[in-house]
Amino acid sequence: MKQAKVINVSNVSGGVGKSTTAIELATYFGMNGHKALVVDADMQASATDCIGAKGAPFTEKELSEMEQKVKEGENVLNVLDQSLIENVANDLSDVLIDPEIIENVIVSTKLDNVDLLPASIRLCQADKNLSDDITRSAVDRLADALEIVKDKYDFIIIDNSPAQTLVSTNTLLASDLNIIPVKLDRKSVKGMIISLRNTLSIMKRNRKNIDIRILFTMVPKRGKTENMLIPWFRKQLGKLIFDTVIPYQKKPAQDASLMNKQVVHTKTNVGEAYRHLGNEVLSMMKQEVR
Ligand SMILES: Nc1ncnc2c1ncn2[C@@H]1O[C@H](COP(=O)(O)OP(=O)(O)OP(=O)(O)O)[C@@H](O)[C@H]1O
Ligand SMILES: [Mg+2]
Image (cartoon, rainbow, N blue to C red; front, top):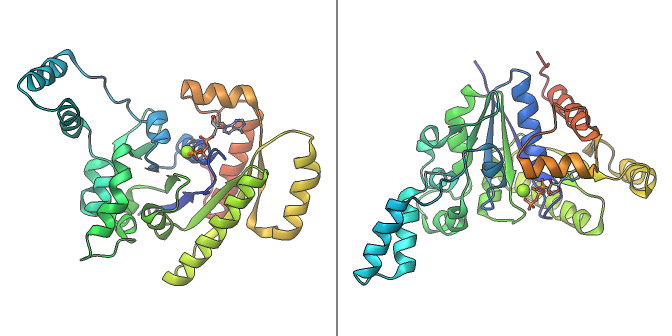
């Protein structure tokens, strides 16, 4: 029987390659016959936009129904809000309220062997919902939900927002491995330190073991970062750092994000690096690519 390994991708610094890493890894595992679930834990919903079905635009019928309500004296913002609530499918925020419904919220994607637990802007309410319900633990909901589906997947990969919230505590406590992508600039190194300390303190407080690995991303070829910074960080932090380095590659990566295409199956440097990373993770998890 399958028993999914859960991989969290997090850094409190924004734009360091969290979503890209989560999606490329899931794509690679799926390509190689492993069943993967992407959990989108970011209200920006980048992963959902990238691999999930796009939210449909308002229909003519909806617009005329809303117009009628406004004519009858209802506030236009309330009318719009109500229509969105009725039309938005369930997402992670519903699962954090009721972990039992997870199987009904997971959707399939255009990628082979990859499913998605989607996110939406409604996640901005999740912390309030979690702390309002004082009858249950606010930090174990995602772990409880994932237990229900772990026998269906080999890997569950969680894409986080940069914010440190009750949602991000939930994602860490559900994880076996926390990958921290870092661009080696001062801002994202600061984010890495905060993320590392936070992971260690959550592990200690909850007596839970989580593997931690730092991933250098968007590294320009043959520059100071590659020649000077990476060797220094490897010397100081050794085993915490993946062998794989993700190079900066303006064109393919930006095209990929604009066109919602993944690069892991392409001949680009970034594609090759993500394949290497996938294999590193697989060997860490003691699984082999079929
Ligand atoms: N190796 C790369 N080389 C060049 N650009 C890249 C690379 N990886 C990702 N990018 C681009 O960098 C931007 C940020 O990447 P991404 O969205 O994955 O970061 P993030 O950490 O998830 O951001 P956020 O904190 O906003 O969620 C995107 O436009 C992405 O296409
Ligand atoms: Mg992101």
